[in-house]
Image 1 (cartoon, rainbow, N blue to C red):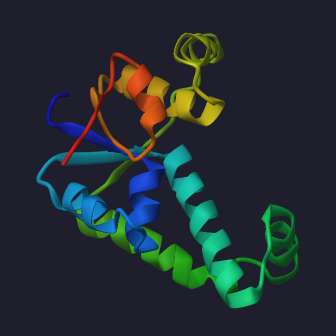
Image 2: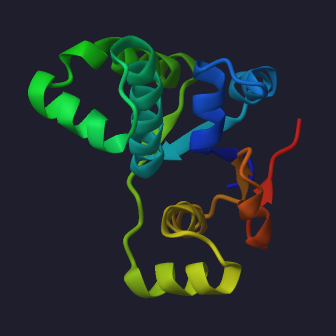
Length: 152
């Protein structure tokens, strides 16, 4: 799948939060490539964005207080976060793939490339779908020789 590019959490979050690499993220997101991500990336992005929004709007300090806030108030206060994330995915045409769940292969990728479980899950999903390119600001993916990190 040479024309397909996997969009990592770091690109989505950097763009939405207008971080230091937001311009680079925008170039990546507006390219003509077929863009995909996974449910893991969606969940990670949602978590990071909810945390940033919660800190700014509700004084949430960390994961524990975010969890407590959501338990008490539900997701309604975070509707703008959900809308922005879903809007971006729709606008730039990012297709959400199901993550590949193969525990033995996940462990092999974790151990061979010294990746954390979430990054290994993303790498495994790319490998299983035959995706060779990943857009990310996370240099850890460079250790996986079957993935080429996209540069602008």
